[in-house]
Amino acid sequence: MKLNKKKFKPIKNFFVSIAKFVDKFIVIPITKFFLSITNFFDKNGKYFEKWITKTNSLIFISLIMALATFFVVDSKSVQLSETSAEVIYDQSVNYIYNQEAYVVEGLPESVDITLIGRSSDLYLARQLSTHDVTIDLSGLKPGTHKVNLNYRQSLSSIDYKLDPSVATVIIYPKKSNTKTVTIDLLNDDRLDEKLFIKEIKSDTDEVYIKGAEHVLSKVATVKALLDVNNIPNPSVGDIAMKDIPLLAYDESGNIIDVEIVPSKIDATIKITSPSKELPVKIIPKGNVVFGKAISTMTSDVTKITVYGDETVLESLNYIPIEIDVEGLKDSKEYSETIKKPTGVRALSSNTINIKVTLEEEATREITDVRINSINLASGLVVNAASQNDIMIPVIVKGVSSVIEGIDASSIAATIDLSGYGEGEHEVDVVVTGTDERVSYTPKTKKVKIIIKKL
Image (tube, rainbow, N blue to C red; front, side, top):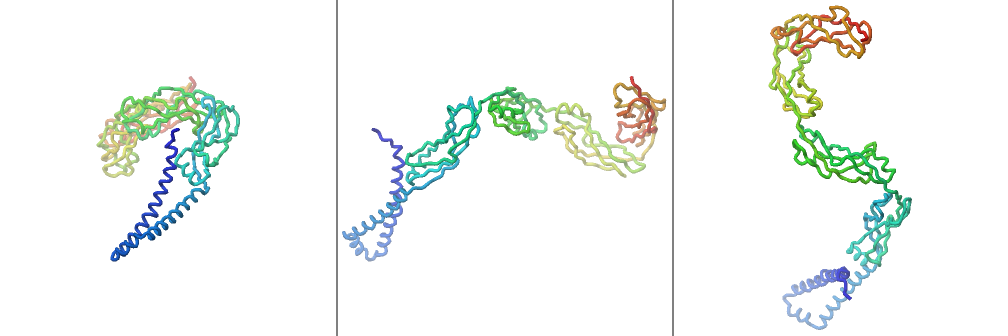
């Protein structure tokens, strides 16, 4: 019959450790002690050598060492024979049940194990490091059950206690539903501002969710969380992403613990860089001093390339730059930060320098500016009450060289008919022009109109 060397190795190591202890703390110190005595009596070395070689002296020394060894080993053996306890915390629990057919609630994730026994046995148990705790649910039907936790002992000479030792579990039949997968972008603000994620296509649109019926009913959506930080070298083109994790959420956005099959999906990201070159439009705000007008407004940037969503870019015709000219007396240079329009991610230029020059103001009257209506309700038609309510004169003010080139085609006169119904009404006239250096004032402030049904 062959002996299992691995089984007796801990015992061998135990006695080797005792031998090392005796050698380190008894034999070596005593040897050093007698060497120091020898050095002290170095002048009388012959006398000491004669004494130490006597039979009686050797017997006396051996007796002292034997007694010392006896007391040390005896105290050690008493210590090892005493009963003590040791707690092993947070040991994982293994579960045995049909995970394809059932869902179990109430299973403890970990337990504390208290080992009770002789110190020598506890020492051996620590070396073996086998602390398997299991809950066996095989054979149990759906419902509520109290089950014992089982601990596989490494040594039969040790008693143990588990905390907890009993678990109350609820077993449910496992159900399944299908859910449509949506993809959420995380950290999309960290993508290069000139890049835009136009489209994300996943390799699957639907997944199965599995769990207890009352838990599945809480699931509102299943999302794939695509972290932009995980996109390798983002650039224009199609990029394949692997193993995007899926999570289930309820209506409040809380994560629901259910099984998702598959638990991860693959997707292809289409990255574009939509851009559009737009002119800069300088818009003065306020009025310069009386008798003066803006002659020129020049800037070091006349066109800007903007980056963003294509639908946003389609709606933009220019980049507005507002400057404050209230009370301006002389020519002035402005340095402005360009504000990004809503939906625009990046600009080719972020600052602009503008020079405004002033000259003497002149006035001119532009006649026969046609009035147009806006926001008239459907099913209605509007007519002017008289010929004077069809066209109006407009007063323009600015530098002579500027207002000389203005005609009626560059002026828009409008009346806003929001909320107006059938009948005769008197409404305000609003006048605007294409040149921001010129002020436009309608000579006729109000006109009469008649609204009828079609």
